[in-house]
Image (cartoon, rainbow, N blue to C red; front, side, top):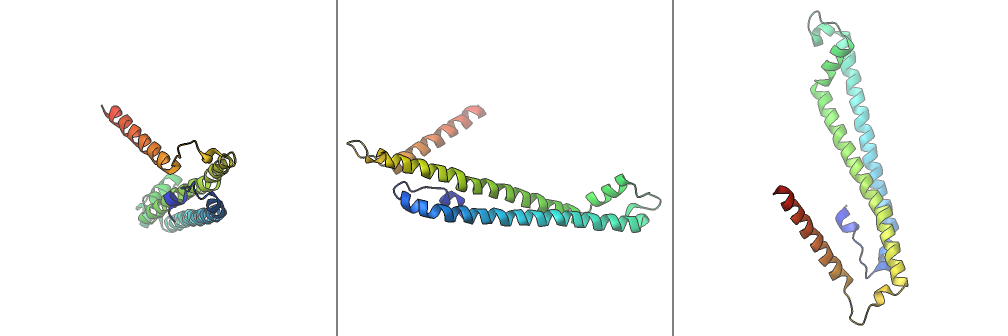
Length: 163
């Protein structure tokens, strides 16, 4: 999947872009769904490992906490939070959550923002906006020029902030 490529609209082929829009929305919706499932499984794995570790420490507190240390809530929590399995599971959970959140943003951008942009471009086309003035205009070139200006402006802002 290439979000950067898929979000771009070819303004000279709006009919093809419209045909592709529903497919893209479904593709990224399914991707988000898979990411959400992965997140849910990672979350359940954290809970499972935590439960296993709590059961272990409660069965034999002297072995896991030290001789004479009572299995209080704080001691048990300290034990499982410092356990390598729990730490690794928590890291997987965080990565899955980040991936799911990113997938949701991408899904929404494809489903709503790109769709709205297509609707607006079609509306402009219907109003003969692209019929153009006497001098033909290359919208793609103008868009790239604008994008380049925005990049240069962002670079200037970063330089000014560093000074």
